[in-house]
Image (cartoon, rainbow, N blue to C red; front, side):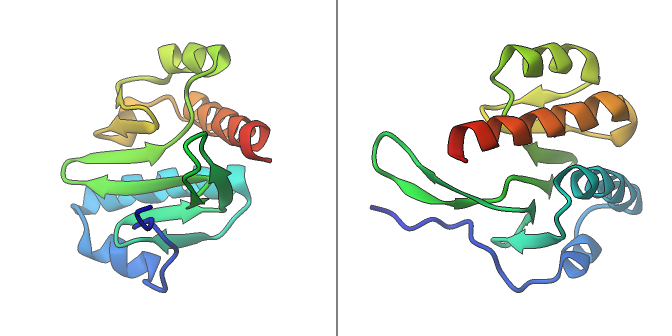
Length: 138
């Protein structure tokens, strides 16, 4: 089985932010990071070369693949941000309808500017994701 590429590293979160994006993106990243820290009550750490992760959990899929991942995380990807969230439940989908301008993948919530989001709804979305992870993985 392939080894997970995304693991905690010793890289500095501040150094990652300093080398990524524009001044505006770094300011937006700090706003998102404040929410992630408040909701998770965890200090951010780098996971792999480009994810600012909060907390961790262990998982095992039906396939037998297992690993560890951050409970939530943030990355700057070019002109977009990605926040890693669980968004499958009906309550999460209801929040997505109110959060603002975004796109999404299976567990990737993409947006271009923090101003495009309703911060209170975004915070509830993060909290709902953490609840979902705890229910699934303990």
